[in-house]
Image 1: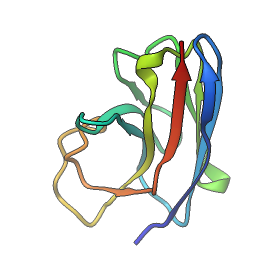
Image 2 (image 1 turned 30 degrees about the horizontal axis):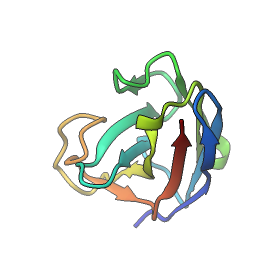
Image 3 (image 1 turned 90 degrees about the vertical axis):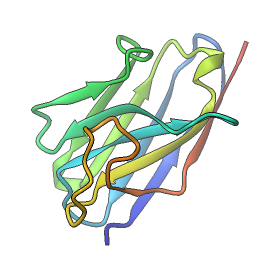
Image 4 (image 1 turned 180 degrees about the horizontal axis):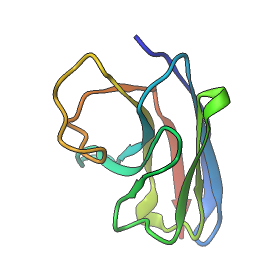
Length: 125
């Protein structure tokens, strides 16, 4: 079992920036961020393969969000720039659950991940 501790998030006006971070208690092959807005399904935002060789972004955030990793600290960061009101959601840190076979790709919320408790990001217009 991998425990995840999230920090960051908050409220900002449209066009502003935020950073969220997440530290895992152990090694995991993929770490990243998903989000869920009220009444909507959880969706992948950005995921990074450990070592940083591959990153994956939702089309809606490409060019605005950047995911990075400090492997020594098992920590992943998500820099959110040029925020829009539609980015408002609960953001969940995710870490690949290697003991589960269900894998539909890094940005698919149905894939096996450990989940953090979530941190709220609110963007006002």
